[in-house]
Each structure stands twice: as C-alpha cells, then as structure tokens.
Length: 386
Image 1: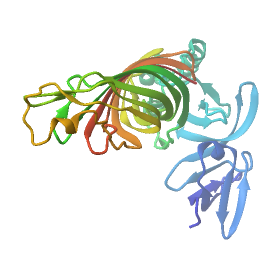
Image 2 (image 1 turned 180 degrees about the vertical axis):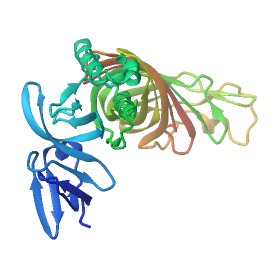
Image 3 (image 1 turned 30 degrees about the vertical axis):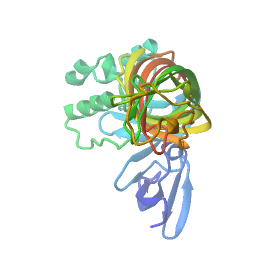
Image 4 (image 1 turned 180 degrees about the horizontal axis):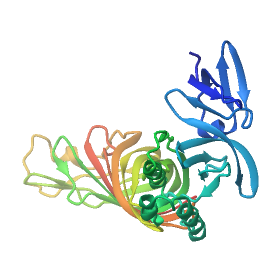
C-alpha cells in the first residue's frame, strides 16, 4: 500500500460501490476532494462527481451543497451520525467548525455547536438551532426532553442524534471518529519575578537567606490546544535578568566568614514547555500549569568577594592570611534546567482572544558547576493570547 493511502471505497452517482485506496489527508482537504486509486489508476473526485467516499476502518464523507456565511459550497461532509436523522461535520480553511442536520429531505440545516473551551456563546444562533432540533425531534419525546442549552456541545449533540435514531430502532447508526482539531495559541506576557539563589559548597558553606533578586521579564507565548479537550501544550521565548545579591556568608561551624558585595548578574533567554489544563466555566476560567524550563545565559558577571575571618581565635590547619583578600572564583554553567508549576485565571474576550493572570513557581539546578546550588523563583505574569 502506498504512503498516505488507506483501504476505502467510493459510492458513484449510480449508487455503485467501488473498492480501492483513498489518500488520507487532513479534515479540511478531505472536504474538498477525494484521491481514489484502484486497478493501478488514480482519480481525483470533487464533490458532486460521486455521492460519497469512505475508509474501510474509518469515516464516511458524503457530497452535499451547503450555505456558509451566505456562500453556497459543495463539499464532502464528515458523517458523524447516520440514521433517520443525520449529523454532519466540516472544518473550513479558518479552522471554524460547522455542523449540519438532515432529516427526510435533501436540504441540510446548520446547527450551532459551541466548544466552551475556546468560543463565546452566541445566544441568537443557539436559539435558532434549538428551534430546528425541537421540530426535528418532535416525533420522539426522549431526545426532545433532553434538548437543553448544554446539548450544543460537540459530544452532546452527537449523543442526541444517536438517541433519536434509537427511538426508531435504526440499525444504521454509526458514530464517526472525528479527529481532534488543533488550535494554534499565540500571545505575549510580561511579569515580575522574585528569585532566590542558595548554594552549599563542599566545605559546608551556606547562605542564611539566599541571594535575592527582583526583576521584570517579558516574552512571547506559542502553543497548541485541542478544541475538544481542555488541555494545551505551551512553549515560548522569554527575556529577563537576574541580579542576585547578598551581604553575608556564613560557615556552619563555631566560626564564620563574611564578605562584601557578593553578586551574580545574569541576562537570560528562557524556554519553557508546559501542559495547561483549563476548567471551562464561561468567560472566566481558572487553569493550572506544570512543566519544565531551560535558561540560556546570554551575559553573566560575578562581583569579586573579599573574605575575612570574623573570629580571629578560630584554629585551622590553614593560615588566616590564606583567606584574606582572596577573590572567589567559580565555574558557571552556560544555562539552567528546572521545573515549574502554577495556576491562574483567564478572561475570554471573544472566540480567539483572552487575557490572563498567573502565578508560577520555578525551581532550578543553580548556576555553579562545582558547588551545589538551587534557584527558587516566583513569577507573577499578565498575558494576552490571540
């Protein structure tokens, strides 16, 4: 079997079924044409040239003429439910979903179906569709009774048509395997971070409260979300600066050292990768997020440190003079790996745009090669997606 082709069939205008192989492309292309191969010949069919085509272990696509935004189109529509009442599905070039119902006549009627994860509710459209389905299901009380505003969700509307067909004992019911549609998510963010660097050397040195940094960061967000689920995968590119500073450094023994103006000044590019789960409730939706990140240092600087004893009576095999006026030198990593977790809330402006606020905790592996160190950062960010 050739690459991209699967076993299938076409139904001709004379109702003859011809078996062969059909090219498996994305849902938008499947609506426009059917590339059919049989007996060593390949033919491209447009809607109207055949009645339908389908995959042996997959979906059925029927040729219909529909009206979308006052424009008449002939397309191959994905048959979601087939029986006394039929339900069809189509994705246009703008990645918008369309559903059409048919019962007892060749005319198809558009049904307003909304995925509340990504779309704003349109009351007028839902009211018209409610009236259409009320008339369509009038001869079967069970699905008519179940018809509510919640019915106009992708999964609920299919179940409603299946229930109606069962009311008449239809044996031709077939629920199609509809591919989950990916939605591209784009956006920008700006935020404020509170960061803390802690480390522990082989000599058991430690900082009491860490090296602290407060800074702005900003970046671009990009990701993919599934319109039939509440999950999305997000990444991006962020720019920011760390200016970790501390004023005292202690040794965990009877005696301690101190130093002057020890600091790390870093500029970085951050690339996170996180999974986001949104609890859809309408316009205002909470969400949680978890994943990992990588920082790449684009500039780095350390301020030199002067060590001195605070306890001149401390006995050591090394002389005090060996520690005085000696700058500390550390090998630095070229970047940092870590994990992130947080939560936030978003406000949907319309079907494509939203603003959100989130708080994230980031834990990193630090910046020093020979010294065990960690970074702890809390980010507060405001973002806009479109």
